[in-house]
Length: 353
Ligand code: ADE
Ligand code: ZN
Image (cartoon, rainbow, N blue to C red; front, side, top):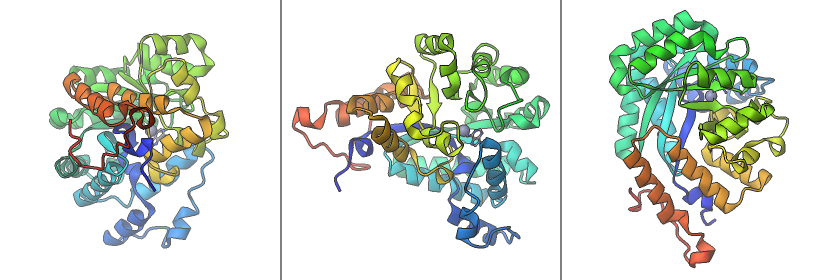
């Protein structure tokens, strides 16, 4: 089958939880490698738990499977596998979230886990010609004090961390509670992002912007309930890292045809497409693009705009952003029918920025 526009489109992934990128086979293999008494022995048994009523239901399965991750090598293998897999989707830049608090609560030193993630990213970047960075996530259900302790513990890695994020159970844990954590992150020179408006109300998006002063909103899809907020997001070009399939699997929308990503894009918001926790939610980033194309009738121009948005919304230096945007133009900028070109740029075929 010839590659589609989505295959050929260079893209960045900006919303992916590394622990959530663990494939079911790897859960079982690591549980065995680490000699754990894991509740599921078969893949079928494990997959039977992949049915989620909401974010809380998913988080329980996610936390249980994350227990398979014990050593630096586990985190290395996990991260490297993700990078190798998404390079097939033409992801050339990845900003990956890692949750130090999850590791400590499983009695894994977060420093050890982070070393594994960072080493794998370095190796994958060298092997696949990618760029990327790590976003350390504050888990909001553990409270602000715990978040602050985590941030301070991670300070020795300040130069190797790109940003602070805010994730886990949203409702009942409004962004404003985490003001101190975000202030300290900014003082370290980090960028900041926060999950807001996934299950939580539009007010949480306002708080993330006005109180936490985040650079990007993760999800943000419930903004549509507040037209004034939608206007602001469009005017200020605040990036939203939307995860369409995640939103379906976690019942944020009843069906993909009711998802608002196309409407938000057409209203001029800086939306991007991402996978969140791909093995749990039906696929990696290209599966998310393809599902939106098929169900929401995205045009080729809109698909290219989403690819461009992924770099515009990234934390790359401006010069590198321009290089990647120019690469999009070279590869898919002119529609193949219009240019008469059947331009296919296989991975690593000299399409470097
Ligand atoms: N952690 C992993 N996936 C998440 C999601 N969809 N929302 C909040 N926290 C998460
Ligand atoms: Zn997420």
